[in-house]
Image (cartoon, rainbow, N blue to C red; front, side, top):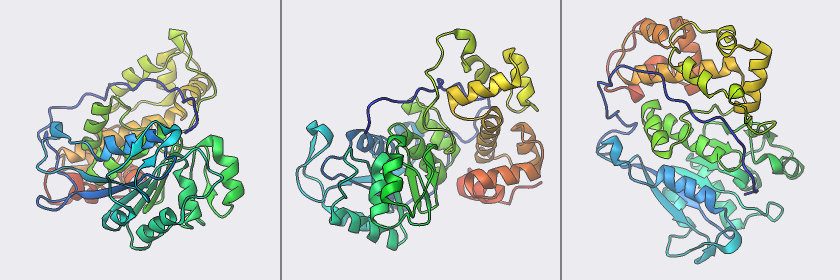
Amino acid sequence: MPQGSSQHASPSPSPTLPPNPNPNPRPASSPGRRPHRVAVIVDEGTNPFEVGVATELFGLPRPELGLPEPLYELTLCTPTPGVRMNHGFFTLSGVPGLDAVDDADTLVVPGRPDNVVPRGEAVLDAVRRTHTRGARVVSLCTGSFALAEAGILDGRRATTHWRWADLFRELHPKVLLEPDVLFVDEGDVLTAAGSAAALDLGLHIVRRDHGAEIANAVSRRLVFAAHRDGGQRQFVERPLPDVPDESLAPLLAWAQARIGEPLTVADLATHAAVSPATLHRRFRAQLGTTPLAWLTGERVALACRLIERGEERLDVVAERSGLGTAANLRARLRRETGLSPSAYRRRFGPAAGEPLRA
């Protein structure tokens, strides 16, 4: 895990919503069903940061959610006993071997600092077995090298830490590398960029499995931005400015409080007292995205929460979230989640019921 980290604007508060009639959202799995099993491979030299991220997201209890069962069941597994992590700060012992991956619904492969030396064949075989039987495979940081070595990324989109992008392309030319994004979701294979992008991908997975309401609750526990789109850039062009007038935080808070209104990029620029071009540059520099993409992402996130809280009318969801029309809501929701509004409600709503009405 390379030293140094990107700097981003602090997360702003979420837009105001009415009291939640369903404070304990229904999990993706039904009561009595076993939790989703997550296995994390820890081999020699593994970066402890990514192991910690996986443990935090998929291994810790979430009593604040008030759910009858945990969201996930986590297992750390190693190819050999007594594995030393990067820099020798930690040694992991007393955990299962790699046979544990055969019971996992999701396999997580963290990164290592030495990406020239291939991962051991036992690790690569575990990745292949997991992928072949249809389970989800996730890499964090340079763990994508292991997925590429196992052959499961050929012809597919993927990302890795930007510092290792040139080496990755050289070693794995068949992979469609996207080096300037936070994460890539290919359905059954997901790859995160460097360091803190593992948190972004992890929250994306929680959102995909259990809905936006639960993902937001987990992000609050982490004191981390609830949603940064995977297409955002890995790093910013310069550090965040020290001049308060250039910070986007006040503008983001103002816009989030009005996200249901028909705000435009021009409205944001006017409120910030800058030109649209200057606003675009500041969003790119501080958030790694565009003003329009940020607005759309916030509106889709609000629409998801409204659906999860039981709003039945599609036109009402579209209006209150600022997406305008039911057709626009359908298109944006499908692009962000892969689901239609009715399918999203069936999966994440407070209870199964009639399809959303236009």
